[in-house]
Image 1 (cartoon, chains in turn orange, red):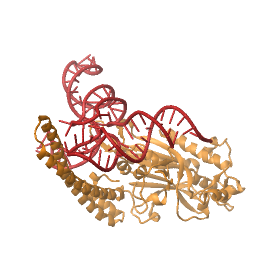
Image 2: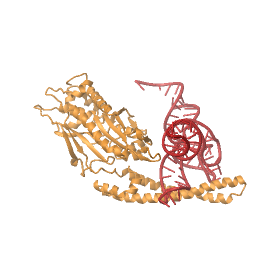
Image 3: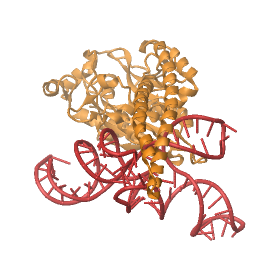
Image 4: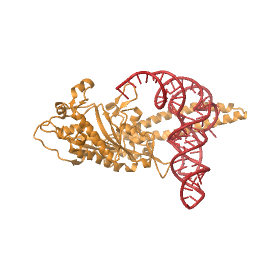
Amino acid sequence: MLDIRFVRSHPEIVKADLLKRNDPGKIEWVDDLLRKDARSRELKVETDTLRQRRNAIARDINAAKKAGLDVRDLLAEAAALPQKIRACDTEQEEIRDTIHNYLMRIPNILHDSVPAGKDDSENVEIKRFGTPRTVDFELKNHGQLAVDNNWADFERATKISGAGFYFLKGSLVLLDLALQRYALDLLAKKGFIPVIPPYMINRSSYEGVTDLKDFENVMYKIDGDDAYLIATSEHPIGAMYRDEIFEEKDLPLRLAGISSCFRREIGAHGLDTKGLFRVHQFTKVEQFVFCRPEDSWTIHEELLANAEELFSGLGLPYRVVNICTGDIGTVAAKKYDIEVWMPRENAYKEVVSCSNCTSYQAVRLNIRVRDKKDFESKQHIHTLNSTAIATSRVIRAILENNQQSDGSVEVPEVLRIYMNNGKFL
RNA sequence: GCUGAGGUAGUCUAGCGGUAGGGCGCAGGCCUGGAAAGCCUGUGGUGCGAAAGUGCCUCGGGGGUUCAAUUCCCCCCCUCAGCGCCA
């Protein structure tokens, strides 16, 4: 969420941003928020004055009693105060709830370079890498190929778990693990510390790191417990330093999260998304960075470059798009996607999402950095996250792009050291 | 799951109806040729104020009793130890 102090001092920036997002309905929220904020502070003065009086009387009563004086008048005055204070507190509580609700729903301030657009069709391509190869045979869809080679079993997974699940078997298990090691090893060279997080976190941690409407659409809740299955390691890692203050020397902190990811993925399914592309459970290596505010835009480009290095290393054709206002969501200030070439669909499909969340997550999570020169001064840090490799989607890309006419699949060279040097699956 | 012990500011610890004290760490200052030691100040959140200042909140969370609760009562959460169960 935005810092109330920022909204207070720069309402025009918040409103201009909402206009850019074509979300004028929320502009009225900003005005109401400012009114409620002013009333809240006014009310705090009233309440504090009452409390001050109550505290003074309590002290006076104590002193008078010790001196053996009559305290009846003081007791009478004191008796009336709690009720007045409670009335102020009740109003204050309502106002703060309203303020909090607005702040939780007003989106992050976008970077100037975010293009305006109504939906994902207006994302702006900024780069292409590689050339899709042409083949003189019919490509099998990746799910069929996996089944035919005994690399996956979708039917039995559906039988025991439902649609969107899979058994991975044989060579694809090795390929999945190889992709994980490939990503972790490359990121380790760039200074990232590998992290395996908890796969379940509680609601209040979740509220700090995600868009609230994702709760209904994406998250699995564990019945009877305050626990949600993580949709990505970004979430537990973001929440990891909740309510903490970093020293400047400890930033930037680069973490490579690795975890299973669980998503309800309510929506359309088709032949090419059926197998491993759109699933309820997959493994992902994620880049996550906590940094000083002044460093985040440089690091955003760094995360994109790391992700690109992974995909160019695999030899997969891809393009990079700058996500437009209509598709970016509430948390990121700027987001790049990498879309990899999927020959069967003759299209680039999303495999990486790389976001600078600036201070939006850090404000909710209350994560700050102490200024080295001014010990008293603390400001919210910035957080960034980017996919490194989501294995299931990359497996699909490899099964399509590296498929041979005999149904075998060439293993990208960079992965072979992790797969007993095998050249083909 | 059971039993017991705990939860006090960054951390450790005292207080157990009347302004939450001390140690360590960290930051700043004094001292010094420079440092160490020593001494002083500060250390969470928030409001008012141009500032100097000044007030309120904070003892795991929520209720209750009281003029006044860290302290007494009720409910809940979490941590640790032992036992039980378990891959």
